[in-house]
Length: 547
Image (cartoon, rainbow, N blue to C red; front, side, top):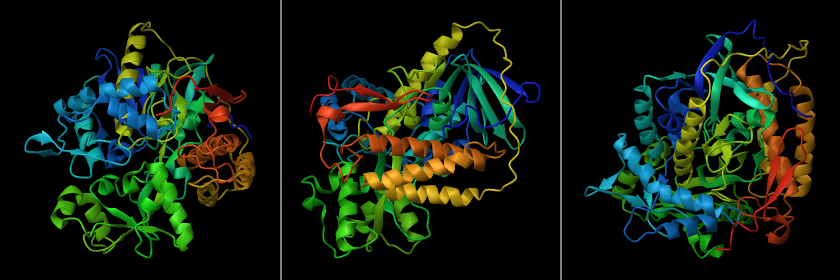
């Protein structure tokens, strides 16, 4: 069932109005970096679903990739990114972002970010898929926490910027196909119509549609769903990246074990103590994430075990405590001494490579709507994201979207007004729904049908089930975030399944056990979906040369 254009009822005569020059939806690194590029003569409103400190950016462990070492080159970083992306990267985008990386990293330093240093020089780490040490990190394994601390402090000091925390964006407002702002909700004021000259979407990912995920609770794919309902193209949704090493302890939250641990020498072993990665790839534990995730799942299958293990007992204990204090602390809560005990791990949904299609400046196909970060498909990651390129993408495209939206808003007249846009209420449905049950069932089903290993029959069953749930969930008007989140999750899960079923090959993070080969002749292309339109297939054969 196609979702309604707007999830909630609203009337301009019954809902309060807020006016701002630029609306930024999302308070992670991409959104707050966009804010820094907006002219201070413009008013800016930042809407964030939780607190500013609860974005996925906050929990990033590894770091930010950039060519900063004497032995490294831009060509090396470009080549590593293209190789990881399995020929679906756009080389021009990759080159631009890679060359911009050092400037954006040094910019963070001037804004007060304290990256880890050795003898006064930036300490550069190495992660899977990288040919050189080029990852700047902070607080050992809490880079996101430090970066967000600095940029939140800077943002709060800007007099032209206002932020609304604990505020849910229900839908984008469009008039004749042009974005005019958003309908938002919070407990204090209820619904509010926010009218804006330009809107920047930076809502992050969708990991919560999967049972196993590293993402925080807010990552329910809202941005992708509201962009889809507003008419934006949604592209590459079959490419969900699964992080290979997520702490797996029954009943606990799924905590990420950063790839930098393997970069420092940690080894993956199975239940029998066998170090298995060399059986699958000559790069061993430092192979790209898609390769490691597949190897772990296959080894779990072979050994009939629910997980594998990371071992660090051969590494210097003092080094481990200094470099990975966060992981040491998390594991200790479960009585695991990482310097002596093996860490149980398995893959989990980590990063949505697909999202709203954007051009090199961060423009979507909806006029006056921009986007940056994980909510987008920018052409940088292809079919598999290279480690530590995500915060980099948020910085680069956040800066571009902010600048572009700022220039566009400055060119518009100051007397923009509300329009008589409304969505009438539907008749109340008396039957109560157990939203938590549907949500948990959806997450479990998607994990089994469209996880690391995929097969057509299971995905077809999942598609049918999503359609069935959607038939009686999407047509309702809820009055609370739990309902809107479930509707968004159903929309996003439907797009993931549809794209994964359509792509009958294996490429990067998309692995079909019924179509094991990569087929460049048929599938060297993006799959794009728009509301009320046929899926679009965009060939990229002329863009991405074989690495």
